[in-house]
Amino acid sequence: MAESIAPFLRRCALYLLATALLLGCGDASKPAPPVAQDFLTRHWVDPLPPQGAPPTSFSALEASLSPDSCGQCHAEQFEAWRTSLHSKAVGAGLLWQLMLMNQDQGNRCLRCHAPLAEQKALLALELGWPNAPKQAPPEYVSADLAHRGLVCAACHLREHRRFGPPARGRVVSGGVAADGAHVASATSAPSPDGTDRSTNNPYAPHGGFTIAPAFQDSRFCAHCHQFPDDGPRIAGKLQEDTYQQWLASAYAQEGPGKRTCQGCHMPDRQHVWRGIHDQKMTRSALDIELQLIDLGDGRHEARGKLRNSGAGHHFPTYMVPKVEVQFVRIDARGGVHFLASHIIGWQIDTGITREIADTRLAAGETREYRQIMQAPVSGDWRVEMILRVAPAEHYERIYSDSLTRVSQFPPAVEPVLRRALREARATRYELARIVARPQSRATAAIAN
Image (cartoon, rainbow, N blue to C red; front, side):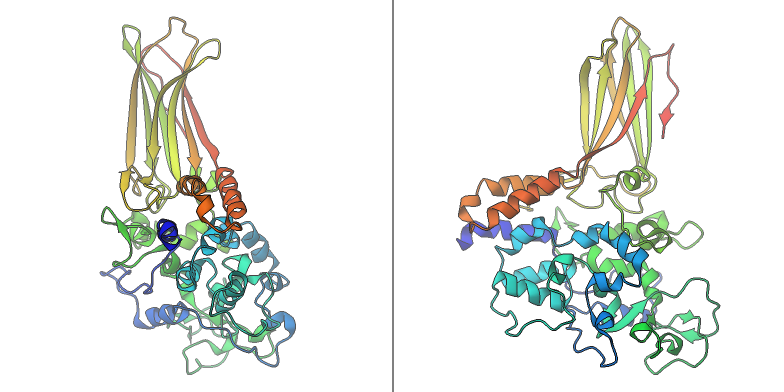
């Protein structure tokens, strides 16, 4: 049994994340301030320790780790989070794999998919792992917490103490935040741990919060979106390299054009984290042009051009999504004639051992596709360049391949695996359809 499952356990590499946090991930020319790096290292210690008993002054609502409890006061952030993939980080696609894993293997995935110690404990109980807690969960741990994914507490709570970015619009008056940056301080001097006393108010809900400007820094996201240099590689490339891709882009350079991860994926601090699954977000990453050139003698050439103008990393950034660029000719009666198809993405075999092709667009990169065709006699025809996105393409292949071996798995795995495949296929969508029609010698470019 172990031998037959082993190839599938390797696939959890899609979920595994760095085991050493951010060390060596910064821009060497502009190293992180020591106090800032210290904060990030403490905040994302691996594994996260249990929250422990809440302060006796806390109400049940203040003590709760449930995102629903946070949403009682932070309704806007909660509603946005509910629509995000962070809230779905523990879904069927992960659960069927956890059912085949031991506790150590599972915890490496949960490091980012459900990082709280309390979430891991609940899943250990559910999956029958040997180190599951013997006692019932405390009242502040909701029964469904493990299945809520990357919850509010994962980023904002440590030992029941709240952390967050500086409030917008406050006047700086010399306070010092948890990572050493200057922040607004209404009254007193910094406390011994370097935080701003004014935010830790015993009369405020949950005792206030600790200001940490690192929440606005891309390195905060790198904890789960960047493997360390000694992490798993294919063809010499880190399987998760988004932060380093961003560092190499123009968006990481200081100046008016700088955009952090949060600047794009949390616009105006919205907790949405849109990406390749979102049509509007994906469309904003690309400039698209199509020209139809009359070459004479009844021949035409379709020239399609794509530029990664809006993503501050590769498009797409890692191996799971694929984008198909298809060219078709539509005749006067509506007949569709296939011309060509191209894939943009990092294509890896389902065993995650071999690169098939890497056609991703780096930040700022432009690619042109050319297709020569014989023109119909009738002038009433057109060429279409169609972009279709499969956000979970690699998962689709893995799940389909795994179903051919489902008899080797415990019976409870199959329905979860089939649900994972249905959900992965359901994420596909058409991104854009650009049209060009024949003119005298060349059409004008049709762009964006």
